[in-house]
Each structure stands twice: as C-alpha cells, then as structure tokens.
Amino acid sequence: MNTDATANPPLRLGTRRSKLAMAQSGLVAEEVRRRTGRPVELVEITTYGDISKEQLAQIGGTGVFVNALRDALARGEVDFAVHSLKDLPTTQPAEFAVAAVPARADARDVLVGRDGLGFEALARAAAPGTARIGTGSPRRMAQLHAWARTLGVEIETVPIRGNIDTRIGYVRSGELDGVVLAAAGLERIGRLEEEAAELIEPDQVLPAPGQGALAVECVASDTHLAAQLAELDDPFTRAAVTAERTLLAALEAGCSAPVGALADLLVEGQVVTEMRLRGVVGTTDGRTLVQLSTTGPVPASDGGSTDLAPFARMGRELADEMLAKGAAGLMGERAL
Image 1 (cartoon, rainbow, N blue to C red):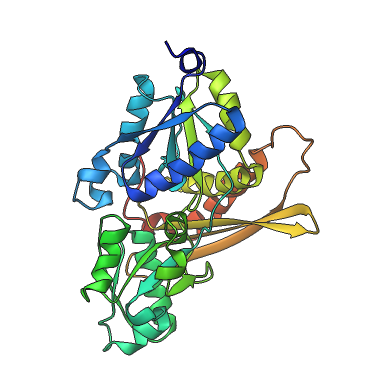
Image 2 (tube, rainbow, N blue to C red):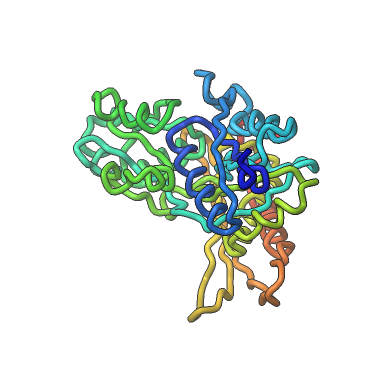
C-alpha cells in the first residue's frame, strides 16, 4: 500500500482538452504543486463548445466552455478547474468560488497575417474591400472594420471557429489574409514570436473583458482548498478584471456581444495609484461605436484582501455613461 499517496492524494484539475487549455492548466498545476507540495493531475473534459461547429453567439456564447467543467466540479470528479476568464459568465453561481485570478498575461489581440503583413499593410495591399480577416468575435469585427475605415479602406471579416492551429491554417492555405487571436493564447503555447505579424494595441482594438487572465475555480464549500488556491491570486489582476467584468455585466451584455474593455493600472515608482478603464461597444460592421474611458484612484492596501468595491463601481459608472450614449442599441445579444 502506498501510504504517501494515501496521505497526500493528488489534486484533480479539470481542463478542456485543447492544446491551449492544457498548456495554461499545466502552468497553474505546476504553481499549485510548488505552493502546496501536493501532486496535481490534469483531468481532460470535453465541453459542448469544443464539439459544436456553430458560431458561439448561436450556442450561448463562450459560457458553453464552462458548464461541463462546473458539472464535473459539482459531481466531485475534479477538485478545481481552470478557465480562460473571458469565458466565464459574469453571474457567479453561489456553489462555486473563483479562488484565484493569477497574474495576467498579455491582454492584447494579435494578427497572424499572410507574408507576415500587419493590419494596415494587409488592408491596403488587397483590392478595395477584399482583405479577408477571420475572427469569431463580434467585438473584433466591430473594431477591425472601424480601424480599416480610419485608413480609408474596407475589409471583409469572416466568422471562424476552431483551435489555434485550425485558425492559423486558414492563413497558411491562402483562404484568408489574416486571423485575429488572443496574444495570451499564442504566448502560452510558445508561438507568439513565431506567428505574430502584429500585436494590436488597445487604442485600435480593445480586448474582451478579462482577456489574458485565468480563473481558478473550486466548489465554495471546500474552504481549505480555496484558501490554498488563493495563494495564486494576483490582487492587481483581480482588481482590473473586476472593473472590466462589472462593466460587461452592467451593460447586460453576453460574453459574445461586441463589447471590449481594458483596465490599466497606473504606477508611480513602485506604487499603483490609479486605474484607467476603457470600454467600447459597436455594431459588427464598425459603422457605429460608443467608446469611453474613466480613471479612478486605487485604494491603498492594508496587506489584507483587496477591497474590490471601488473597481466594481468604476465599471458600473462607465457602463451607465455608455448606455446614456446609446450603447444598448448597438449590441446584438443582451444577457437575460
């Protein structure tokens, strides 16, 4: 009998089966092992979002990637799960706890373009209106079209699904001129430098709320495990995504609505003093955008848990301003 294994059983980490999900779950698993001394095994789970070929907006948005993992948690088949935070619905079920939001990776989008061309070069090189850019995100569609118009050109956005290799394959085959992906995904599988033609700055395309961040979730009743996982939490990332996701929730927008948001922490020396929150809502053709920003002070930490209320308030207030400017009429999908 293996008494060590009995006394210190491995923690079971539920993860989607994709290469990206396995990579980012592996990073979390290694950190949990380092901090707790407990072994961690990955449990691969297939979600409906992984097997469906329909567009995300038609099958419930990115939340479809979450439900199977939560079901496994509820049944006790896994001890905790790792999600891309941008996939989590903004309403948090009481039976689950986001125990940790680790330090965020690059929140920007990235363009993988044919012949290594960036967005402006692709848009100008093609005949008018014929540059074909693939993305499954209405948020990206809206902002890419608006960006093209500032250059005096038009583009065509093509809805796509699939894993990273599938999406990049559209460019390699010549079917598309470019595809837009999350930079964090390429970074986590070690292919950002190899594949990126252009890192897209937020001034051009704001990322999805929570993009680049991970959520480590367990059942709320397992307070001991939640406390252990909480050691992975990064308070500044938690504050930033709280502002972004509160804005999304206050807009009553679903995960696949054309909403972008990014909270930047402003630093003086070694002290974080302010947060700037930017938000955008637009029609998918990019002809109408509501884009606003706000700034607010970051409360001094007393060394304990960070008070998230000011960041949530910032998100709600910016959402109210955007709604007053007509944002509600620009979203094709409203959360119920």
